[in-house]
Image 1 (spheres, rainbow, N blue to C red):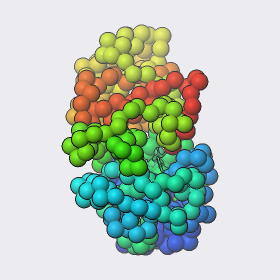
Image 2: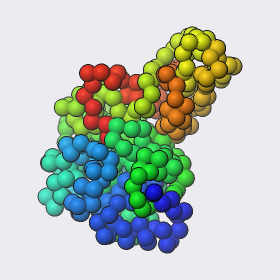
Image 3: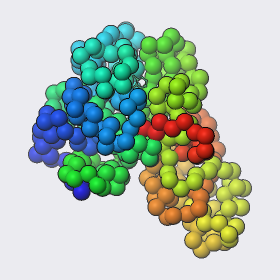
Image 4: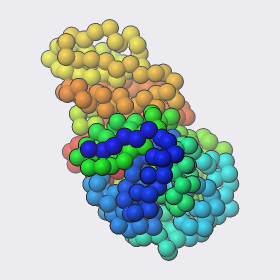
Length: 336
Ligand code: TXA
Ligand code: MG
């Protein structure tokens, strides 16, 4: 059984001791919970791959305290542009892909010549980084292909068979979707994953940004169409589609909606509705928890009412919903 620990000086020290002894701990970040290992311990990072069931060709983000540690320990080279982005968005939910340091173990970067780096702003992640004094490699703390965890309980549910996994319980994550990933080795920089640092914010910084939508594994890791997915079949629909499903007594559905008036009751007593907040920050923070709850209800289908807006953070939310909905057949899955 995993062990949930409240955040205290003692639990932070224990987590750092575990990291120093080449083992794995789960900790909160402002985006989602991470499953961390000393980035320079090949054995500990391999353990993360084994625990998650993560394909060996999918590299892991290295977390650092600041841009200086990124430059000195993790990156092979670091451009002025990276400095500007770090000054503006770090600590925070922006991951930069840059040439890697030759000292990093191959397993962290999955054999690539680049490395993904971010400096988290969550106080617990930062206390842990300071205490251990080394960069921490950490993917999201979920089984490969499953929805990312936004509470300590989500982590415990995914790794319920892992004896003695320490999970630092920092409460629910503020942002709720994973960091924006930007490939700084491309010119213009290329968006590899949407997040709460939106394309508008990045375009402000660069003017130009390559936003070609990536959906195939071979286009880049972490870009498979189906990703972040519940186990129940999941679909995106209009308000009308949701109403029809709720009025259909022969299917059991969980509707995830923003129109509160859809919560009025369903023709099938086993169908149910989860009402989401209608501002995008709160919607994002709630999304993965809602998908996990919906999944646990054992319905035939999870039907998500399409958010009305596509602007700003809604674009990133829509990206995650579409990945949760992509068909299971003929998929190329990398599911991180
Ligand atoms: O918000 C986050 O980024 C969270 C928290 C824990 O920091 N972490 C996270 O890690 O979402 P993970 O492993 O679930 O997703 C990392 C993404 C994957 O899509 C991976 O393929 C991509 O970053 N990535 C990592 N290294 C890369 C590299 N060298 N080149 C391109 N993509 C890379
Ligand atoms: Mg992940």
